[in-house]
Structures are given as C-alpha cells and as structure tokens.
Image (cartoon, rainbow, N blue to C red; front, side, top):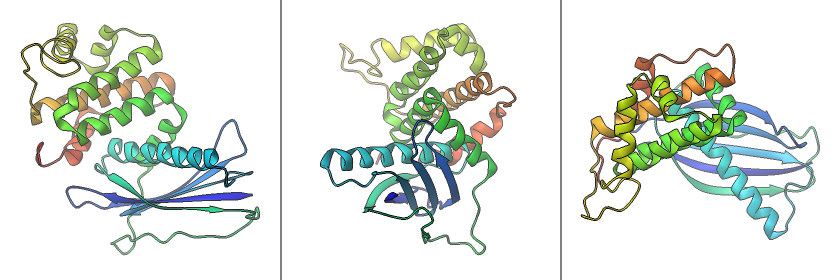
Amino acid sequence: MDLVASVFTLRNAKGLFAPKADIGYQEQDSNVRWHIVAGGTRAYLLRFGPEVAKKEAQNIDNQNADSYFMLTRVQSAYLLAGDGLFEAEAAGRLFLLSVQDRADWYAQTDFIAAPAPEVSPRFASWLGALIKHTMLRRAAHDAFLALSHPHEAGAFVYRGLEWLVLGEGRSWEDVADDVGVSRNSIRDFKKLANVDYGVRHASRSGAKLRADWENYGTWVCSLIDAINATRARLEPGYKPEEPALVADAVMKAMPITAYV
C-alpha cells in the first residue's frame, strides 16, 4: 500500500487559525483512501492505495492535482462552516512506496489553543457534501474565489450560480426562489454581470464595476443560500442554514479591504 502525503500552509488575512479537522474518506470508485488532518496553519492530506506513489512523472502530476482538488474542498468547507477564508500554499509532498496496510503515522499541527479547537460538526457535514456532490463543490469554490478576489466577485458568483442551474437542469427564476429574491432581481443581476459593466465581459466604454462590500458580500451570501437550497434537494432531510448563519460565515471570511 503506497502513500502520498501533501503538506499545505494555511493563511488567513484576519489572523484566524483553522479549527482542527481529522477526517477519513474512501474514494467511491477505487481502493484509494484519504486521511485529512488540518488545523492552525497547516493542512496534511494523506492519500493511500495501490501504486499511488509510482515514480512516473504523469502519476506524480496526477497526485499533485488530486491533493489540490481535495484542498479546495477543505477550504470551501471552512468557508461554508463559518470558520473563515484560508488561503493555502504547498509546503511539501512525500511519496512513500510499499507502506504496509496497518502502518502507523501521525501529523503534528500547530494548534494554538489548549485543548486544541476541534472542527465543528458543521464543517464535517459540509466537507462530506462537497466531496459527494460535484455541483456543490464547484459552486462553493467559486464562493471562495469571489471572497478571495472581491474585485472580480461578480464573475465568480455568476459562475457559481450557473453550476447549480446547469447541474440540476433548473432555471434562473428557480434560483431567485431559492435565494429569496424577486425574479426581476435575478434578471437585474444577470444584466449587470453580462452587459457593459466589465464583470463577465469587457465593456466598450472600458468601465468596470468596482468592488463594494455591500455588493460582493450580498452576492456571495446569495450564492451560498442557493447552495443550501440545492443541497436540500440532493440530500433529503438536510435543513438549509438560516440566512443569518450564512451572513455570519461570509462576514467572517470577507477581507478587511477589497484592494491591497
């Protein structure tokens, strides 16, 4: 049994530290498993299975990509769980050959509290949903990108909503109902994003919509509201989060200034 261990540094513009996460995951269509250990300023992603650590360049590239894709799920789950916005930078990766089935290992993370803050059930719930549902994962990562790049938030929010519209085969009017706004409001947003404001397309005038807290904050909240509504349809029994809880998560993740 081979092992690939990827290490990432987590950073938060507000000085927040990521809560501790210690979660296992079995890939649905293979014998490959993951173990995710994150918290403080580090994330360790362990992927183990037959021949995952092969030395071929293509395999190494594939493992690097897989670790990145899993990391985006972790980042998006932190965002949706209200833990904050965490940027990440690869710090290293190990490829271990011929690891036995019952090998023991551990990852040391620099949690600052004693006892270490544990990840919430809310985080674990969101991470599971993002791993399971591709459209939710894509939309959630666009919410993450919108907050990471507030001056381009409109483009990312539009695409995030589009993942949900196309993923379920629904209409933009249905999205308006999910978000709790009028259908005229969703049409106005689509017009803003697509016509002469430099959001999704260049404008003839050269004008471009500037980042504004009320603007991109509200848009991201609406995208997450739509993600919640979509998840409720995909997972019977899931109760969408209250708008106030979503707003609190976005406020915690919003950068202090839109331009640096």
